[in-house]
Length: 294
Image 1 (cartoon, helix red, strand yellow):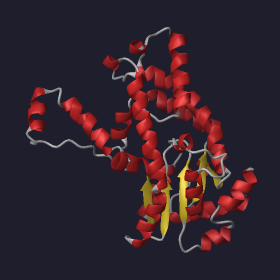
Image 2: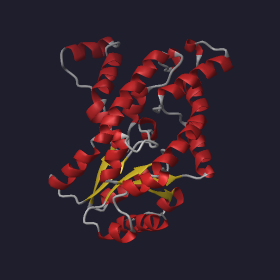
Image 3: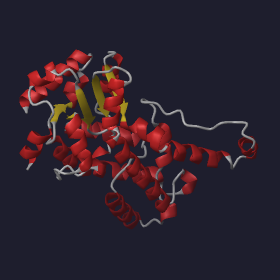
Image 4: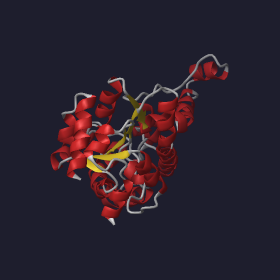
């Protein structure tokens, strides 16, 4: 089935088709930290590419109000700020950017002890579901932004910088998956594949600064139950950072086969190759090489 999906899904079927295309449209996917945003920034800085960030779209269009309201709820606990808010004397909003997604991560949060910044597990899962809905919508907005970038701003070339959790909201084994079908019909899907050494480095990086992430609910429920059983702790006793650290390595293993299945819809490049991309021309050559390999 993989070959059928690949043949059906790729909008550029040869290096020459890619190089000669008047509009080059790609979607980058893979684990966070392997170069998606680095390449997207490089392409955008060339002046010829429109950069569409899925995480930015999620954090502004679809979850911006949730993020701002959460910040306001915290501010309302402080009498001085409460009075200013109630009289419309101050404004609270998130300053989310392509390179600073902290407002979105902070809102998603981590489950566990409230004194250590944790959320009740049910509230944590509610916010996870909000993210799922937002990510699905932001991915489906890709086609709209391709048209918008071309018709409104005059960009011929388009790069979609997807979030690491894209593999959690699509079914790449289903040739009729609505999100995968829409993306593959309008962009070349490019998997940035990491090595075992990259995985180990990502785990070390996460261990130093654990951050919230989105996962499939079945995966999270299973890990949460297992962690409570293993530690003998109650929900209110769990150290939020300890839980997400423990979960992260398992999450990477959970995601790997899903990325591999998604790669059947497009092409694969290695993180080492991506690290060498310094210009838009470098990227165009990299994709031509990947198409030749496929």
